[in-house]
Image 1 (tube, rainbow, N blue to C red):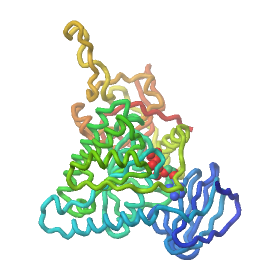
Image 2 (cartoon, rainbow, N blue to C red):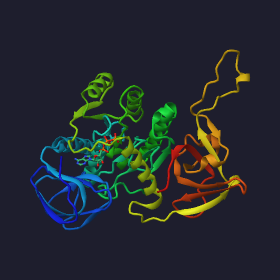
Image 3 (tube, rainbow, N blue to C red):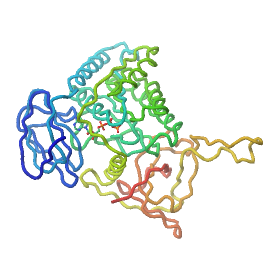
Image 4 (cartoon, protein in one colour):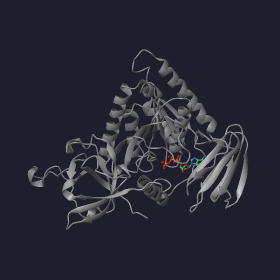
Length: 429
Ligand code: ATP
């Protein structure tokens, strides 16, 4: 349980190794600052006395290693202190990873094995705190001067860009407690759906493409190679979801698997990875502070992520409305559709859908309210293997005039005329 507070300024004294867990109210932001002592939010230290402004609905914890006093003002849905946290075990994992990074940095042998820092993958059921642990490991590493690559494979609730994508970005500074990961030039691949079951084969292909691209980047960058990766995954851990986890572990060559809060998954992965040299499978406790989110809350969170892409977290961006001729754009979707017409097949054979076929899409009213990715591809054949530059949101389709109106984060021409359509929709509210 926990109390909620409204309006008034209040101070909270935190004992060592305890945390203040907060859910900001639905309608108003919350201001909070550190009065004395030391405290961090998911691995990022708070500067003393500076007010931070947390947007509505944000859920987070202020943790202290040695004790702190926090002051807050505004409305919370809940706030309570907890002195039982798994933070000591998490920071111990960090210490081991950091030692491996140091060793990788020191290795002058140019030998790819010893100069490669740890590749950590965080797995576990939904709401086990995977994103949060990934974030802590990244911020602690950045604080010590490492530049780990964050890879987010969670197409439902990812934290690098909008839903429906897998993405990677180097983390050079502790992650901002309010704004999260600030997007400089993330490497993004568009899957187009918020669950992998829409096209499992495509999901695998994109993980492979992303992995290949990272491998090439590491080859030319010893520092980021030595810093390794932290990979966040989806909460789908049964059946096909489990296969996809294994696929990600192998494709991205993860060598540390952190399993959060599930004994069964831990023992399955430990057994299956036993044969594979130098993969450590580690079981970690789930934090009692992780907030469970139901289907509706998740749907809402996805919608906010898309809104944030165009309008900014605090409504501080102004997207541009642009108009293009149908003939200026080429829209494709990936997968589906029979490979060959039935008439071309041997008698009795069923046409099979090719999950990675790039299929041209007619521009019509069906595109209304869809979010499309702008590919970096130069030819349609390159669409699957190309990352994307960004996204547009279709606000009007004028069939008569053959014009399409869309929202883009900035004015001017799109970087490419190749657009990818999935099933990602958004209703601007
Ligand atoms: P999913 O599989 O759905 O992506 P997840 O396992 O990645 O979920 P998180 O996103 O890390 O889970 O956590 C769920 C929510 O709980 C987030 O809003 C996060 O900020 C919040 N949370 C995590 N740890 C704490 C904590 N110790 N105190 C308060 N809130 C927390």
